[in-house]
Length: 456
Ligand SMILES: [Zn+2]
Image 1 (cartoon, rainbow, N blue to C red):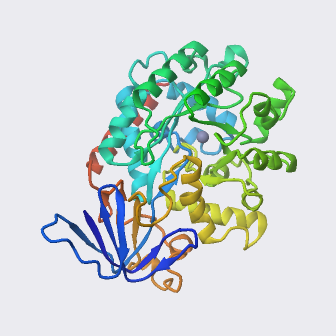
Image 2 (cartoon, rainbow, N blue to C red):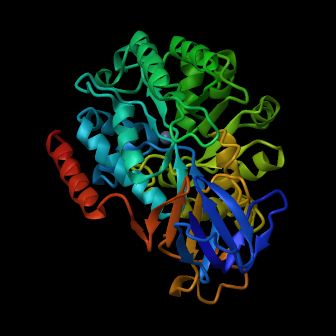
């Protein structure tokens, strides 16, 4: 058991968005057992007590879009200022050289950053399966996430449309339809667990309209729906993608998805920057959701998504840090801040409030990934929590609103503690379950090796 004692401020994100002062939170197993003042401890119980008199406590945030392997290639000088298609075509041949051990450490790095910045659940969209890669990719990732203690709902990604068939990626990083479907069935049967607080939930995710063919989209939807899985892909990210779809398929990206039965409550798209009014209506009517990735959209100059309007129309929106080569970090609280600020560029200062931005990362994320027992601090709910120390330079002077201060102020975005599934994964600002120094050293080695192996 864990007792969070004398919490300075708890933002529950319950139905009425209650905020509490001076309460305790008792965690038993992987759930919140009690919330109250002066909770008496059961005698002879083994209990870890955390003094929270300086801490803000929020539900753990949920990252709905990422490509963890990209942590190995962030900030590459040659594509620091490139648009999406140029950026991708430069990086595909480099990514084709990533091996199993590199995936393990890239997963530790990206998930370590997420845990340290308040995320307790993440997905991943890994769509590169080069011929040289023979390992069990999701198995390697689960090994890393279970070691760190983060809740993980990855997708089995895929690309089948290589350059020789008119797609964007180099052929060496694509697969055949049969290979994708066979391996998707394997990972579902081996790993998928759809219990309410699952630590292993599989999603199916062909990469994007310019890297997969129609048959793959159709077959993936059929397979995913036969197992009641979520379906995910990139959509409407850039003007170039829109032009590609119009010239190749004679349709805008969302119309193509509609034709392929890729809309509905079990579908969510990453980005959704370039939707017109009709398309927003279609998303709302079909219950299709969006993972908003503001930092990536700014970094690649892709545009500003119409998130204010989506929220007002009842479209479910979550937040994603996107791949670390287009962000270039896995900073969850930083993503919340950027979401708030970017909507204000488009709609003015009321474009997105701090609580709304946090809600995207908390309630939007739990709704998208179907974690119905996460996303709020209430008795009986899953014990996934992020604790921020407000008694620091970065928040001093901002305590008139102890919740909004972590979005408006602050510069390192790090938690004091992060608790996932009732277990402490970050303690006093450090990862509990893996030496951070080893992750740094290994990732830098892999990154240097990757770059030296390809001719620039
Ligand atoms: Zn992405």
